[in-house]
Image 1: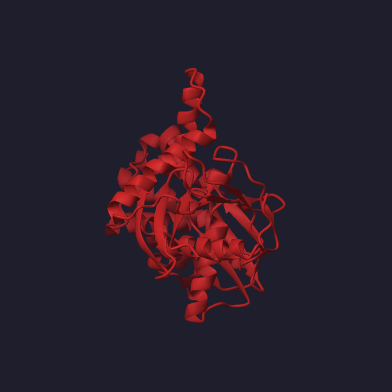
Image 2 (image 1 turned 90 degrees about the vertical axis):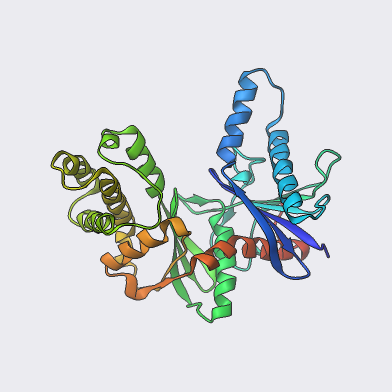
Length: 338
């Protein structure tokens, strides 16, 4: 049995690497950065255009080795030859290697995860296990399935795992994941976060708002956000979006408040369909940056009473717990490897 594992959650715009002690069964230390998969891929593309013959896989390996060195120095532990597990967008076409998705229904014990193992090399002294995502008929995810496996395991320790539930994972591409009998049976994707960024930076609305990322909202901003959620119920999104422009023209809100109004419109639109979901229990699995907004939106929509608000601390642990479970399944040779 290995003494340590390196657990990496590598998203489009974020990178997180944790040192996990197998003997103590806990994270010893971790680092985070904005060195997401999309940035590394763009760097590789720019190098290719400049005549650099670097392979995409090699650039990702070098980026990973740099981050491992940072974590090794922080933890004052030599991490050479420590196995690395990676979930998220690193297993996509813009990542290290494109690995086919697992199908649904998808067991939450990690036994159906698809992966690819890369042997250690002289210039990359780590066995690497690259974890793929899950696909439905019209939907795909990479990374959330690993978080879900971990969250499901953590909830078992609290005794709060109903036979049916809907898990809400806010983000750039929010996911609503439907669970039944310990299986992921279907899910929906909402481009809530990405649409907010596109509208706020590249549309006529960009001059009507001032975007920020402060999770502590002043009272005026909270009221603007609530108003946006309420407005999302009154008309279709294509119509209500223009009210962001008229809010500014008529001086209804300040630009920072108007940005929260826009966020309320988008998040309210995303969550509306949950009201018709046969009153199944809801589980909000959000990081600190979006937890407060989604909690307020669920309250405004009358959904808070059936929502379990998972702590942001538990959500932060979920991906690493999921990766540990997947690694255990890998050792049992139950995983369908590519």
